[in-house]
Length: 161
Image (cartoon, rainbow, N blue to C red; front, side):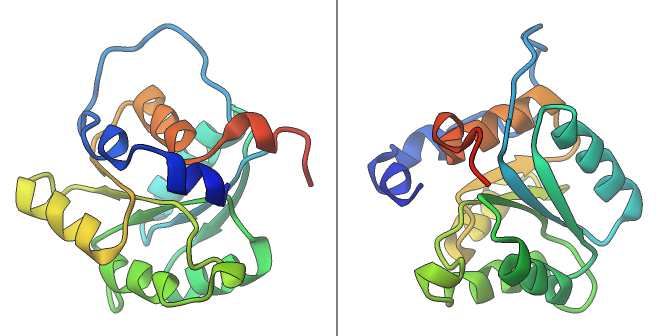
């Protein structure tokens, strides 16, 4: 995963569409990918849980930045999807705290910001905080899955514990 992150063209991820796009009609897969979802809204967590599990991912849900850090330590996700606007510690502070961790504790785990904040400045702030991708709500499910595929080498993960 780390070699993928260093060799991946960051501009490909940063320049992807940030809003809903046309459904490709293909069922994209996330087989074996461990996804940590951090969002204070129960309905969003439930929806993302369904979207990712139906595509073969293993999912851990966290309702706050604190829960997200605990899950990061216990679950060892391949990728993080986090809301930005959360009460208390927001998603920007959460990802900064993740990036401050050593690599072996998840400090380099790819992360996507999923947020209602869709302005150019919001994207810049997300990347500055340490997110690898920025997606504006509402986002089409296939676009979200494609983003995770770009952040993680799915082929090398399938079948691993």
